[in-house]
Length: 118
Image 1 (cartoon, rainbow, N blue to C red):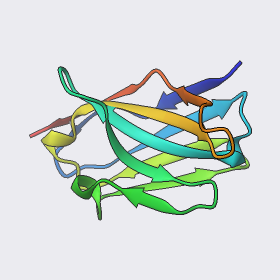
Image 2: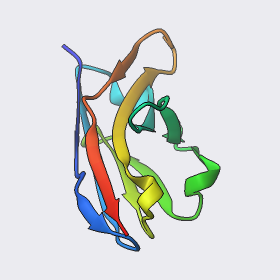
Image 3: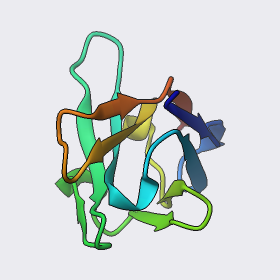
Image 4: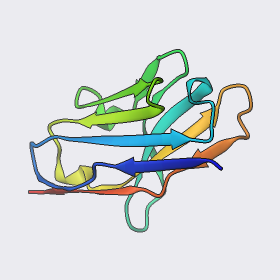
């Protein structure tokens, strides 16, 4: 059974930092590209950051220079370090795993709420 469990969401003041974690089980973690998405009420889920199985990363323009995605294959965990948070970063953040060799195998976590107050 595949599980992705996010944690680390919280209420934080603008300018603050948070680190989100997503612990995966039931997948070959090292073979998966891991992504963080976010979604607000009435909006589509949007890609925030991705880290490939080889460690290459990419970011949405809105978070470049502020957010850092990383992975620890020994812990089957992906992280999102979020610095210089802004009120517009307020959203539910979701973790996604997609197998590099079998892209149809894509899984989601339940989401974690990040709220940035001004």
